[in-house]
Amino acid sequence: MSSIQELIALKQNAEIFTEEQINAFIDQLLNGSLHDAQIGAFLMAVFLKGMTSEESAALTSAMKKSGDVLDWPAEWKYQVVDKHSTGGVGDKISLILAPAVASCGLKLPMISGRSLGFTGGTLDKLESIPGFNIKFSPEDITKALETAGCCIVGQTATLVPADKILYSIRDITSTVGSFPLIASSIVSKKAAGYISALVLDVKYGSGSYQKTLFQAEELASLMVDISCQLGIKTSAVITHMDHPIGKMVGNAVEVIESIECLQGKGPNDLMELVTTQGGVLLYLKGICESPEKGKEEIERRIKNGDALKTFEEMAIIQGVEKTVAENLCKNPYSVLSLSSNNTILHASSSGFISDMKAISFGEVSSRLGNGRQVPTDDVTYDTGIQILRHVGDEVKSGDPILKVYHKEKTLDAGFKSKLEQAVTVSSTKPKPRNRVEKVIHRSSSSSRIFMVSQ
Image (cartoon, rainbow, N blue to C red; front, side, top):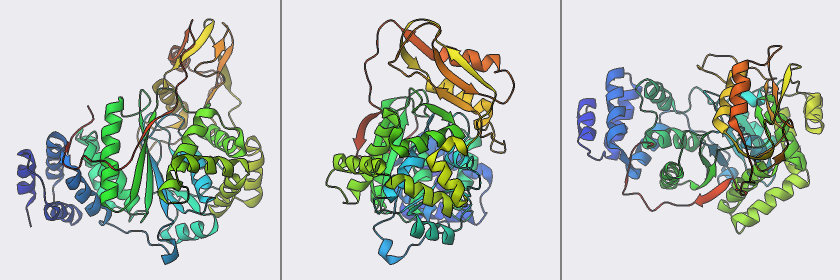
């Protein structure tokens, strides 16, 4: 077995690890024989010298095997699929996509996260629903898939423990931006769900951790290649995150918008993201002959009410009382309360809204209480931002454009100023822009060295 000193030296010299060497590192990581400084040095060597996709796949596989791997009934072998997003502002895609895809006969055991920084957390949004339980055992997950076909839960303590150790040290050694480390962290947790297909929503822009299209394509290509090497059919949808998604940013407000989308009343950009990603999954599993046909099937399942019914079943199996779930799906405002303290922001001039900086919306939403500055922070559910007018809309000076729900009687002056500055009104109408930039299937870049987000 290679020692940690030997492994660090190898990567410092830009050598390529063997699968046995990577397994040795994970074994030493788990048995507690490594000092944090040694782990940090290993991570920094990877950060600086990079990894090939084969090395990244070997690291991902070893991390997946570091803990429990979910097991399904034999008849589900080719039915279990998943979706992952790299995070954004107003990103409530999972709340809609999971029941929509499950209504087509697939199984989605979606393991999601909480908010940190300017990106919202899927679990925080769902916990705004009274009684919604995100703490499920593997047995609970299986039962949910039998009943509703989908569930959205938190990571169990025994799933990919190596990732928990590595991430805590990546965070304090400034090695979070390494593409091989990002990709192995994401894909290992998905692979531990024993899935057969995966769609990745890789965002770029001001409201994403990847700021450029090139960065998004690099990360997407690596994750697709790793997943395929592990036997998971995978495609990545590259989407822009310059403006908030849909019309709501927050916790309860995004659940409200998700229900409205499942009722067939979702805004165009949100529906585009849901149907495109859902359509890709249906195509990967051979349910539809093309992604376009898959998109049409997701649209049909939303329009005929199947997706909404599945969401209701998921809510009930995850702890929501039946009458509450029924009322939620009929009129979400009857179940989810929003703060009575709210402020309307108005257009400063006449013209066309040409920009809404997603990063500013995300930061203000987080500071309103919807997000965390550190993992131990509590969140609020009844605060958020409602977008009344969107990019491309014509407005007159004084027209209402945003409604902000806040805890205090008066909206913080700094928050108000930041949102006002985030909205640009121009004399000319901007060109319409789709959310989806491109779809990446199997990468041909397995011999390349992947390094950091630059």
